[in-house]
Image (cartoon, rainbow, N blue to C red):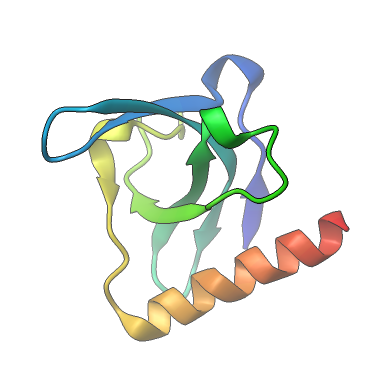
Length: 98
């Protein structure tokens, strides 16, 4: 598994909800899983970056030609085993940060 910090100029994506509301998200980090053959990204709302608690969201994604996250290619993680693996990576990352 390779964890990658995004380049400073590519550390945000804009997501739209079902009603067309747009929100800017910061990229916490991305990683690749050989077991699932996918790339994953952890995001959190930019407006909450200075708060004590942030809600982190995870998606699988298809990297663009530079290997970066393209907001149009984010996919929900629906497989329970895959979700457990992603959760474990996040837990490892957050425990390393403390």
